[in-house]
Structures are given as structure tokens and as C-alpha cells.
Image (cartoon, rainbow, N blue to C red; front, side, top):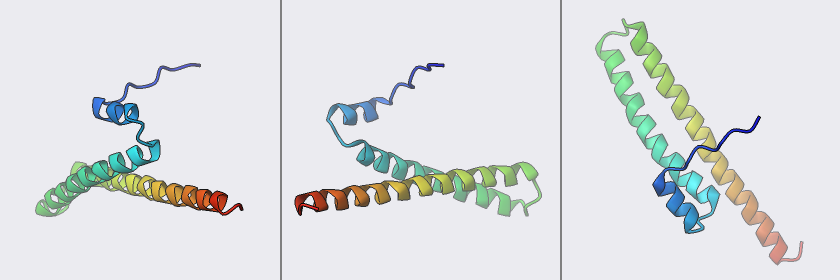
Length: 97
């Protein structure tokens, strides 16, 4: 089954057009989304605490933002790991290894 790719946001497409490496685009996008998710998580925690943890829906909201934030952090870390691994390969190639 073939699916059409989701069109990129204009900002991301512009970076692709400028030949910014994909890993760098991902790194920046993940960082921005992490900051947004962290703000949402902080707000969800504040609301939950303000209401003495009495509303299950508020707890679900907090759990959602915790999970989303954790997933972004994991992916963000992978961008570093991949970049460093690629850098080592490039250095080894320069040194003839």
C-alpha cells in the first residue's frame, strides 16, 4: 500500500531547499517541540496541583504531555548520537581507517 507523504511545513521545506542536512533540521525541530511540550506539561501539572489531583481528565492531560515530552527527548538524543557517530566515521575516513 502506497501512501502520499505529508507535505512539509513551509519553514522546513525552505531548509530542505537550502540543503540543510536532515539530521540538523530534525535536531532543531525536535528542540522547538520539546520546549513547547515542556511548557504544556508545566501548565498541565500546575492545573492538576491547583485542583488537588481530583480530576482524572487533568491527570490524563499531564500524562499525555509527559509521554510526548519523553518521546521527543529520546528522539532529540538520537540526533546527537547519530551526528557523533557520523562524525567519527568521517574522521576515520580522513585518517585512512
